[in-house]
Amino acid sequence: MPDSLADLQARVVEFRDRRDWLQFHNPKDLAVSVCLEAAELLENFQWKSRQEVEQLEQDPQFRAKVIDEVADTAIYLLSLCDVMKIDLGQAIADKLVRNDQRYPADKVRGSAKKPHEG
Image (tube, rainbow, N blue to C red; front, side, top):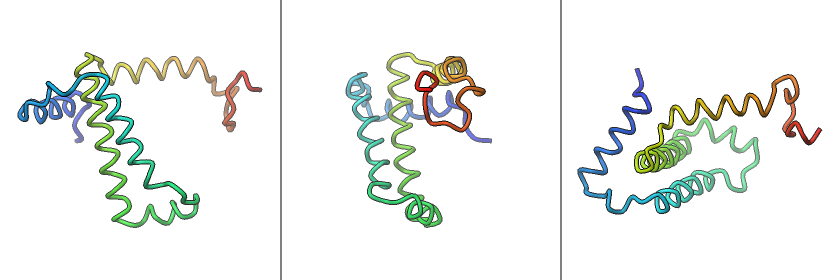
């Protein structure tokens, strides 16, 4: 069974603490790092058509690069949550409730438009 978010966060914190990196982990720099890693993730898709990406999804090297960048982004996000005392699982659950209210399925099904956009 995969690790829970809490277990993964604990592993990230242990990794960080064993290297004495907490001194560098302030909210601003961690938020910057999340964005930088997300940009590196996005770079794998830059200038590629939907069809090209669908083909690349079968390429183990491409998938490995994407997986690494997803993991790097998540590690920094978990680090930010640790420093700011955010329960990521709870934050996601709460946001899903708000999104369910904001985007009622019967009003937005099959549309990329927001409800107020008609």
